[in-house]
Length: 123
View 1 (cartoon, rainbow, N blue to C red):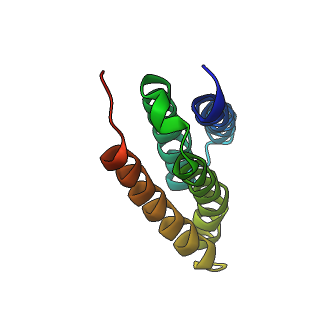
View 2: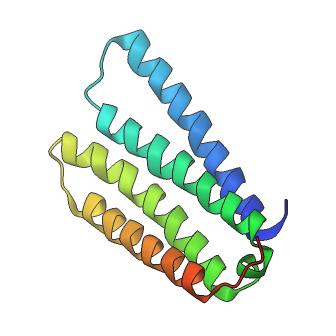
């Protein structure tokens, strides 16, 4: 695995470890108020990033496109902005970052769709 596929899987694994530590912390303190942010970190941060990375590993021609790098930037930005934004929304200190992160997540999905539509594979 190399290039953008490795970037996705590598960053997804970082998000996985952060989510696991956060889950342990919530369990130890019996405070699960931030569980929606924790769930989004695991789903968008680990699961989606891993799926994207495995796609790019399986379809290397798609990984070589500039659009794949934009897709990675949008995906990473979505998680990095959305998760603190969800925490802020839960704590009632603002929803702007959650909204911005959500928009980036949708743009990431659209970029992935564009990658799929424009890719030709023999898989």
